[in-house]
Structure formats: structure tokens, C-alpha cells
Image 1 (cartoon, rainbow, N blue to C red):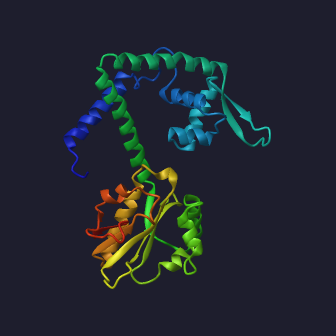
Image 2 (spheres, rainbow, N blue to C red):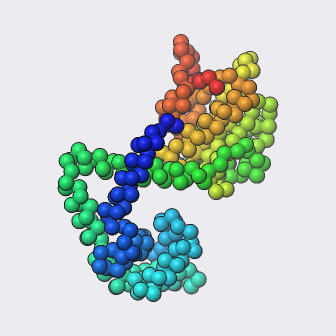
Length: 302
């Protein structure tokens, strides 16, 4: 949706700022407890994560390690946390609560809980459900946007072969798709780069910070019309589902197909069984009319 209203977006931003202010998050210390917002988040994560490292906390708080290190140092000086070492590897250090840290958590957590509860009690049941769903969706949108900044899609390189083969094997382990690949004498997952060097064929790799998380290819459709291609061998890491990355990958393939000169694109939803048919339908793919021989084929105009 490119036509989002700027007025509504700014209203959302204003309401978000009001939430921050009403919750007292701009104060240096929470009520009279003397704990900062970042320290509260640190203690909450320590309470929910068993034996976390500095790296674990950085990942959970979405902060770089140097920022987290400074936060942990301050919390350590305040006596909120302590370090523990791995019995099997003394180089590994974990973070743990101290009694002081536990007491601080037990002091501010009920305040935050009651603050939220009292606010919800002023609303109707329908409004409360709207708040629950709205906050959930906004958090999801922010996460999706953040992760999308980390992804790239580009044409396959020969060094991508091993990573793609591993991804396909993990995603399709035990499936008929993998068996069909193994039985094919003319195709090997380890040779995807070589396979897609033919005229009219391309394979595109999606990466997140250099890690391969997905891929999809286009090749000439098995017919005499040179302006028709097939979208094929689509794969996506399971942890990336529901983030909209499949849509980005498919859109990229269709645009590239258009650049090559294709006018139409087909996809066989039986062969791409990792994804629900409505994924392709939302992308504009439609069932072929009067096609009883192959009902699994969907097509769209490039």
C-alpha cells in the first residue's frame, strides 16, 4: 500500500509519542525506584532468558554489543547483575540476577502491570481487543520493516551453490520434492548456478546479512512460445515465513522476467507446495480457464 495517508501516519506517530509520555518513559528513573528504561528492559530479559550472554541480550534488545556492554557495566556497578562462567569453558560468561536486581524487578514490574491494567479498564471490551490486536500488528510491522532493511536479492553466484543446496535440503527434508530432485539425472541442487546459465533462465538469491534465506528461479515454459516463463524452485527459510519476504522475492522475479522480455509467467503450485496457493493469488496469479488437465497451474501477465 503505497497510498498511505500522511495525515494518518502522523496521527499514529503523535499517539505513539503520547503513549510514551503517559507511561512515564521519558523520565530518567522509573517512579522512585531509580532504574532507567534500558535497565528495566535488561532485567526483564534476564528474567525470561536462562543464562544469557552479552550477545543474547544485544539480540533481544536490538542493540549493538558496545551499547549493551555499557548498559551491563552500569547495571553491574549498581549491583543488579553478576557474571557467571561456564563450568566447561571458563571463557564463556553469562549474566545472572543478584538479589538486588531481583528486588528491583519485583518493585517496578507490578507498577507497570497495574498501569496497563488501569488504562485498559477505562475502555470497552471491544476497544480492549482493538488495543491488543493493534499493538500486536504495529510491533509486527516494525519488526518486518527492520528485517527488510537487512535483505538483498540478487542473481545467483557460483559460491551460492552450497548454501542453497543446504537450504533446500533442510526445508524439503523427507518431501516428494527432494526425492524428485534426487531422481533427476540432469539436475543437482549443488549446481543451481550452472543450471540457470541457459538463455532465458535466471535464479535469484535472497540473503539477510550474507546468510542465504531464500531463492527462486525463472526459466522458459515448456512450450513453443518464447514469451512465457515459469516461476520455479522457490524456497524460503521457515523462520522467515509471515514476514512478507516471499512476496518480495516473487515480485523481484516477475520484474526480472519482464526485463528479459517475458509477457506471461506460470507457477505450478503442486511443485511449490511449501507455500499456500493464496500466496500466488495475492500476487496476481490466476487459474487457467477450461484447464482440466493441469489444475495446479496458475498464471499472470508480466
